[in-house]
Image 1 (cartoon, rainbow, N blue to C red):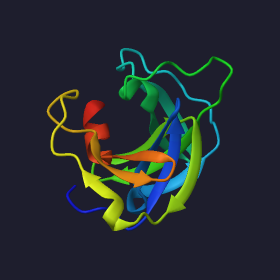
Image 2 (spheres, rainbow, N blue to C red; image 1 turned 90 degrees about the vertical axis):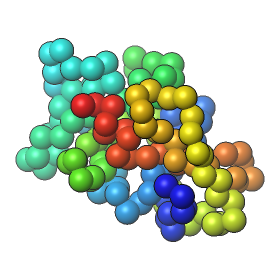
Image 3 (cartoon, rainbow, N blue to C red; image 1 turned 180 degrees about the vertical axis):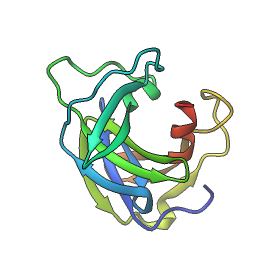
Length: 144
């Protein structure tokens, strides 16, 4: 992603702030129980029922190599829609929809990350620090 999105949905994981292009965000939900899937990758927390639609729940802490969530903490879900389908991304807390200043955008060319893709598409400089923009399509590729 070479150009910044006009609006982003922010959320926290561990002690970091991340964002997704709001164009791909379908909904934000409080914690819902998930059903574990045998032999699924560790980052797949399980399946959840979203208004009659079965959706894969992906733990972004695992996907991004962050420490595990405390056992008593209940994640929230950022449900995204992509060409590959609908997925619930488990995050610690959802922030706001923001319109970052395009001049604060820094694209990331290449990082040594899992697989061939780059999970971090870029970063926005804010007074509170960097907000890392995730690439939804690359996140979903991790699950395949």
